Length: 131
Image 1: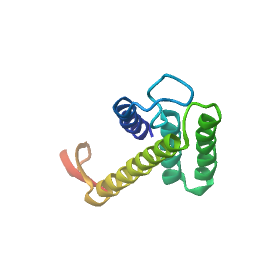
Image 2 (image 1 turned 120 degrees about the vertical axis):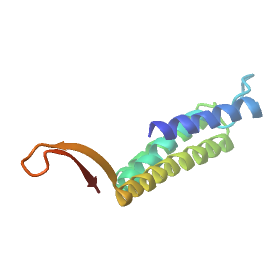
Image 3 (image 1 turned 135 degrees about the vertical axis):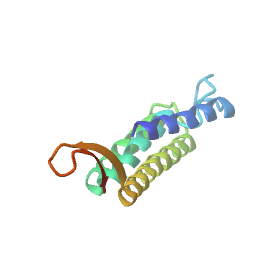
């Protein structure tokens, strides 16, 4: 979850200072995309992938509230929030999927460990393959 949030925030920050879109009613020029929405959706996308709809739906509802509040508070336009949600969701789901693939790969190939076996038969080191 931390990786998804960190990577998504990095992309959002680079876009903010590259695009330089003004905020509604302000001289600030870092409106696009919404960073708050990005991090909220990175979090909820990861939660959804790891824990399913039972936790994913409430997480998405909170994220949608964050996005709506950014528009309501006159800090972002709709397209800022939609872009932030897309970036966050892509990283949240993507990082979770990569983590699952890596975990499955480790399960299939197994790992080899050398551990001391102290019994009468071996009296030395043994190779143990763990799945």
